[in-house]
Length: 304
Image 1 (cartoon, helix red, strand yellow):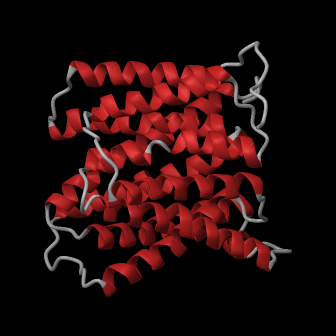
Image 2 (cartoon, rainbow, N blue to C red):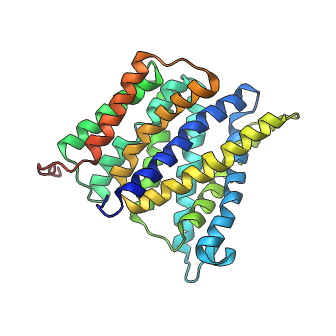
């Protein structure tokens, strides 16, 4: 993060992670009302992809130029395909399959170990510095997430491995997006990756027998549209904007805020209680983000 744009960088990430966190509340309400998770995820990202089209057209001066910019090559399409498969299809599919055998809290804890994997992969593939204080911050962040979610995690089984796979999918997508520049603008890339991921998720959902419920209330539609547009189009688009501005490790450290915002949103929307442990977890998350993003005077840890 450079000194010329710290305010916009931080504001963008806070907005993105707030929308990510609030999506857990909207999703929980809809799943509790009987909506199959994979069907919900698939149609959520179809609508979210469509919602990016006006933004993509505005950014590039026309829809055709945005979605198929001049000079676009097969490599660009393959990169968009890879990001869609990992960022949307891989993360969401593995996350929901993990929750078939482990608790939602345990799955979320595993998903939000993503920043530490991004830091390690960023050191290997992007040359990001990995100072000791940054490593400590990442570990503190994961502890903070576990406390904020109030989750209990013990043992490693198939569900835990699948949940960890969701975090690794997000890590791979982050590294691909940061390392391999494409000719697509931010919103056009957001459109392609969400649409590709949605098609894959819907194929899996319908093949497994899931269907959209026959009756949908007005309130359900409102929650679905919030989940699809602000919490998906908004969060993914802002995430890619921030990723283009900052390093992969620094940007991903803010993902620790997403579960904290989920807990806070649950308190106000679902009237879930806040415990002292969760408040401590929030404080640790704040400390972790500060440690990861500060510029320590000491030298970076050497590569092994």
